[in-house]
Structures are given as structure tokens and as C-alpha cells.
Image 1 (cartoon, helix red, strand yellow):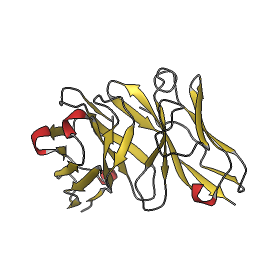
Image 2: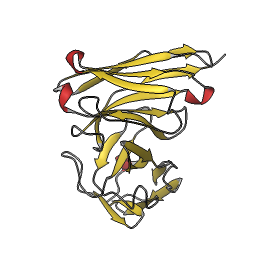
Image 3: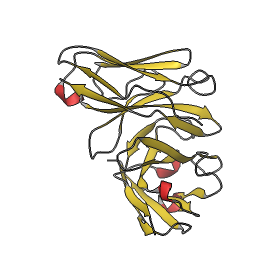
Length: 110
Length: 121
């Protein structure tokens, strides 16, 4: 159960697109189509943004999209807005009723 | 409206025990899998433990296996986390979260506000 690998920080300007990567192993990301992405603003509880790799829960903007290739999942945010500034965490099912999170990525909207 | 309210956090000495509770409302508790996720001060999220709808399937992070026990009481709409042999590194905000389906393999759709556990001598 090693944490998934995410970049510590990414940044972009309003209106731009950014992509956050999430690298796991063949035991987690590579084995299951069960990668989720969570957004967390300071002092707030996490919010589910993407599940099953590319699905958006109701109420989440279509500016958020997800994908996966091999052992790496990605979250793309298009048309960046100031309110997108937050920490983002990927999470993958790892079998045996267990999950593993990534270390988190701080998104700065310049 | 889905509500998850954690309680039971506090200050405990290393080696001590604590039992966290999560009171659920606004949905049929027994239909969903549940999890505990923690966040150490200034750090990232760490999945701790999960349980399916009837308690028949549970999972634990390696860091807590053998020390923590997750359970649920569907009649009382409550989730629990019994934490024994606590260590300084268990200090964190503990979130209760509801899955989007009955098993342990569903994403966490709803979260509580957390209860703070501090392990210190």
C-alpha cells in the first residue's frame, strides 16, 4: 500500500487548462477502473469530482475530466477559474476492500 | 440531505485507545458502504478503513491493521472506529465518508466534517 504519486503543485492562469497526473502500480491504478479524484479547499472536507476514472457526479462542472492509461491516471481541468484553486487528490481501489490516496497536488490559479 | 457527524476525538496518550463514532442521517444507512479517512495536520489524505453495507467485508490500511477495528450498527445508523495502541503518527482529523454503493469498492460521495484525534504524552 504505497501512496500514489502526484506532482506537489501545478499552476495555471484563468481560462487555461491543466492536467494533474497520478501514478500507481499494476496492483492498484493499473488493475482497476476505480480511480477517483477529490478536491479539497482549505479547512473543508474533500469533494468527489471524478469517479471510475472518467465519470462526473451530478453537480460537478464538465470542465473537469479524467482519464487513465496503464498505471497512470490524469485529471484535466479546462477553462480554469479562481475557485478551482485547491488541493486535488487521486485515489485508487487496491483490492481486498482497500484504497490508496495520492500525496495530493496544490493547484494555484495565477 | 445526507449528514455525517463524527464524534469521539480528543487527546490520548501513546498506547491508549479511543472510539470514534459517525452518526448518519438523510439516507438509508444500511444500503451503503462506509469508510474512515484521516488527514494529519498540514498533510494529505490517507484512507484508513472501509466496511460494506452489512459489515461482512472490511479493509484496513497497513498502517493501522491489527490496531484499528471498523464496525457499524445499521439499526442505530452509526459507524465506529475502535483505535487501540495509538501512536503519535495517528494524530489527524478523522473523516467519516459514505460510499456511492453498498460495497467497499465505491467512491466516497459524502463526507463529514471530521473529528480531531491527538496522540501526545
